[in-house]
Length: 215
Figure 1 (cartoon, rainbow, N blue to C red):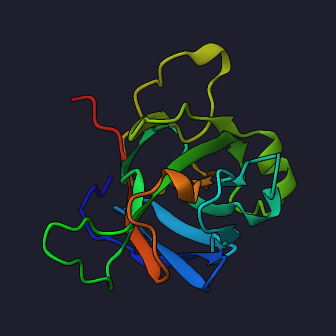
Figure 2 (tube, rainbow, N blue to C red; figure 1 turned 180 degrees about the horizontal axis):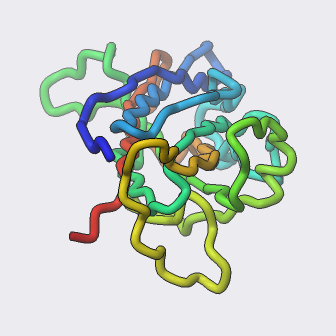
């Protein structure tokens, strides 16, 4: 089984507008990295778009899996050996910054709170699976604040540990399964930010997938 760290990167943009006295936009960049033999198969939608926020408001914008603005949740499908567990590492921050703003001496860089959320679905979908409704219905939400999670590529009955994988040999094909990751969260409120002004607010979230190694 190859476990090389050759990555398959691609970029997702999450766009959020602030409205009030002047128009403002925000971009959250998502970079997904998958090490061989995991392969990314689908990303939908390409943008995580929160919509408009009002300056000096106490109302955040929410995108919730199977809840408010569910149609805006970003979904990633990936294929991996079914007998293994997968580690998902999330490198994120809890705020968005206006990186184009040049603060005066002693002034803070404008920032807005951001809470990143993730869920996964791993009931043992075949590689041909494309039903996002079924994937959503099978999703398991991860509590807020976790930046590392491990779960079976294909859920095992009763939560039993994985049996030792079958050694590779001539004529043997490793059983594969499709699983899903869901990305969503909360942006704002703007009145909880720091020195919030018009401009482009952004951050980068890096998601890395690797097969778990218990050796």
